[in-house]
Length: 296
Image (cartoon, rainbow, N blue to C red; front, side, top):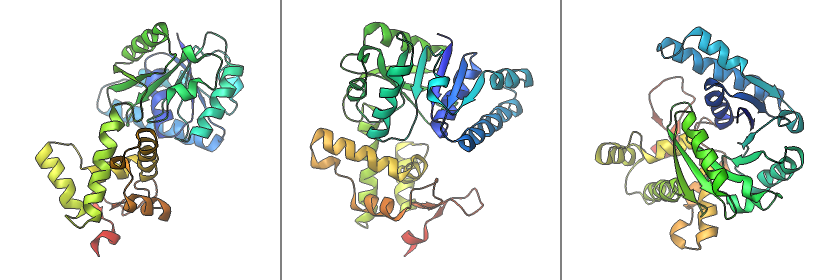
């Protein structure tokens, strides 16, 4: 398995492409937007330059990595030779279902189809294809080049052989794969998102402020960043989407998304990606500044 296709060139997609290419896989990076592909390649180049500066790779390694990546704006052309396709598109079931239906038609029969979804059922995704035994979840963590974990999600019909292949492939990237079963939120987000949601509820109830909540979790629980800062980093729209999947899939009120989270997403305050969430991110400084809304 040496030919990989990655669909979606955003933060996760370009990170996945980077890691595979750096480990000598041939990568087809696919996005319908050529400008997005250009930005993705610039991001990968910038990240490789950082590794050179830290003396972790050489200029020759950088050149070899970039040479392993080819950009495509057509799914059918990009996946033509693929042994493994990893979908890293928007966390929206309808979009993912449409992509997998197309992949099933245009990929070679033996090709494995993986999704980087953080919460959507792999069983439901696999049901869009005629090869559900070859559909699996590969949930990489952000930032992909740095984080070691890959959550490997087995759908109801995912075969043992495919699971073994993807576990071994993940290890070849220097990652630490963990096999989990297909239930809402899997493991990572089944535990993480309710914690973030509870932090938002705590803020909304006036128990403590943004910095105070994050400080308690950093200094008291040894978390590298507080849950509200992490929510901004993930994207509040993604947090809301995952909470909705948990709420719908598990049918328990403890998974109901906070009204504050819903309101912030509705207002367009999505965190880092929009420049404003619980913190302000467009201020031109590395220091965290609490959003003006929460200073009232």
